[in-house]
Amino acid sequence: MISTFNKEKIRRFAERITPKSWNIVLNEKDALETAGVLNILLSIQGQDTQVYADIYGNKCYEYKGRCGEKYFANKYGDVLHKNQVKPVLGMVLGRMTFKELKFFGGDKKGKVAKIIVQLWPHLGDWRVTLVHELAHVAVYRWRAFMTKDYKKQGLFKKHPGENLRANIIKEQLTLERHHGPRFQKALLFLAKRAIREFGEEIPENDVFWKTLKFELETFMK
Ligand SMILES: [Zn+2]
Image (cartoon, rainbow, N blue to C red):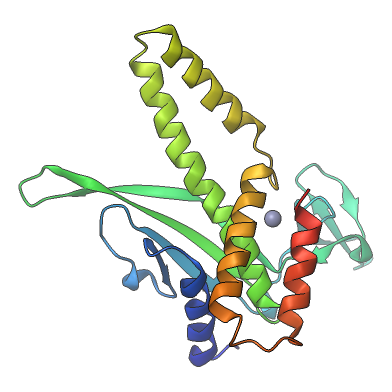
């Protein structure tokens, strides 16, 4: 079990490397109902809720064979052995959801967004896992803005320029892969924030810096 103190430490770390409009919470009740805010619910997991993934990052489920032997399978039906899967350190659960806020009078006030990030802090360096998962969150947010923009462009096609713009947005949305250019940009941004925030606080020989460097080298092309 992770203590409340340590959970708050994790929350605080995430808060310090993310933009002001990102509200990092450990409990649903702490979510803000403020237009433009992105509520990120950090769901801290333990060993008992471990999830596995294959080398491509596909979620794998544990099964028991006829003789009681353990094996894993992903959604494509590939059967994998224990040494072919890895425990997941963190992941974004589901999608980003939006809620329309209203004034007392019933007028629209704006939207508030929410997303859930699961974290297994007993595995690996949770700080680097957080940097990685929050970079995925940034891509979700970007996608939401782009999709909105694209839909608007689609509604008000007045001249060829707008048509072209809509097509470019559509193409960008389609091309963005799981760890694509947008993800890499967000990862670099968050890594820079971590250096700025914790450069003096976390000692130079701490494993965090080595792991962060490795993370950047793995995903930056
Ligand atoms: Zn990832």
